[in-house]
Length: 100
Image (cartoon, rainbow, N blue to C red; front, side, top):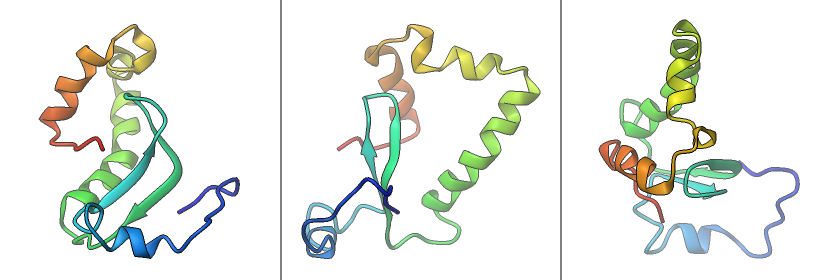
């Protein structure tokens, strides 16, 4: 998925289907160390019951859970809460995320 302000200057598949990207299931443009940007999103070889499907289901489910606790949890772990990269990266490692 690409935002309307993204322009491809070459065939992306010749890069996405070769190392180091060929074994990555979800590729997302990073806006900062804390926040992914939805401007460029690519998914390949994702199993319907695998981690990528879980991640997208979680994207929908998590805001509902946060709303249930009056957004306390969302504020606690938000990048705007004053947390630094050193605070947030251990949380990412527990999710087994790979930041490239």
